[in-house]
Amino acid sequence: MLEQVTMENISQSVIDADGLAYRDLNRQVRERVAAGDTYLVLRHVRGQRFIADGLQGKDLTIDIHGVPGGDLGAFLDGPTVNVFGNGQDAVGNTMNDGRIVIHGHAGDALGYGMRGGVLLVRGRAGYRVGIHMKAFKQQVPVVIIGGCVGDFFGEYMAGGMLVALGLDCKAGQPIVGDYLASGIHGGEIFIRATPDQLPKTKYLAMQEVRGDGLKALLPYLQQFATQFAVSLEEIAEAPFTRLTPISHRPFAAKYAPA
Image 1 (cartoon, rainbow, N blue to C red):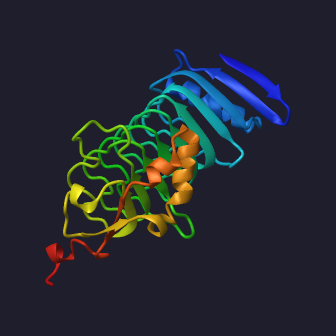
Image 2 (cartoon, rainbow, N blue to C red):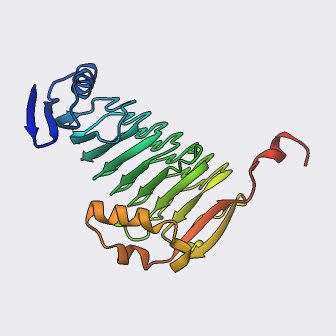
Image 3 (tube, one colour):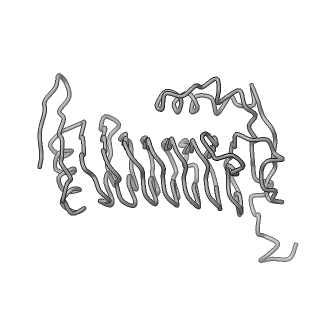
């Protein structure tokens, strides 16, 4: 069911996704975008895949109420997608530009191959967040996870910025899982913890940072704080550890003589 509402300077469509197959829902979304709508509200979303995939234009906003399925915002190139619920796997897959905001938790492979834009998650995320993430020309992708993340955080990372804040983690629960940044060869990772609280790896340089050391990160923390109504001061006053690769060829010795 499609409900169209016209507000001043904004053409808004409300789509009821209840009972819609993912192909039908995505067809309706694309039809409304092609018709010139710049604000879409999707209600009763229950696992439909591929929402907003490949959509372009910084003037387009999509609000999703419910739980979208896998590959939300894959190849996204400019729009803003707000999820008032949880996200599933591969959110922001190969995303080029734009913003995805998840007010709940997210699944595995978040930001896979992402090369631009900003992805914010209020809660926790699963395994292999930021795998193969890369910068592209002047674009620097940024992913901020408010809670804890699983194993292989930043695996094979080639560029961009990954952040784990560890908010609301259970007592004694590690902010990141095992195999932290396995194979990383570019970019930087900020974790709201001290180096001694993190798993050690010979492929990473770890540096505790505060104050000026967070200068590049602060604008994105401000976005996170504003979006989710949390205290920037409380987040930023804790120590962070900045992780960077010590080699652009971390596995070279495994394939060729030193």
